[in-house]
Image: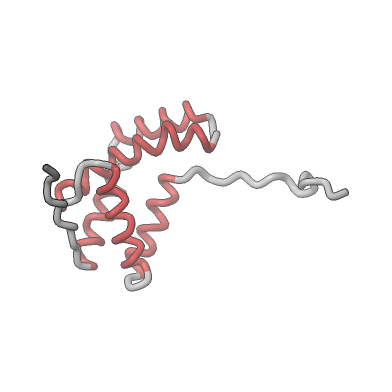
Length: 122
């Protein structure tokens, strides 16, 4: 027999700001920062390895924060939180700015190829 689906957590804009701020702060806790750095170093700036190694660590760090606000302690909770933040980004400049900051923590800096080393056209 299937269990009833969990109630979707709802946050006000103010609550979303608080949770997003706590998530960002969680990444600067020395233990978490070390875990992220180790995962990044192991990934060697390879996008496939980033998804395999860095994303799970980042998800765990976020889960630790958002579970206190009613989001489930699985990857689905992080996705629901991300959708909620995305919804509020257009309504609140502070959330939009914090979202950009969180993305910069999660995503590796993109390296651009040097000028003139593009794909040859023939």
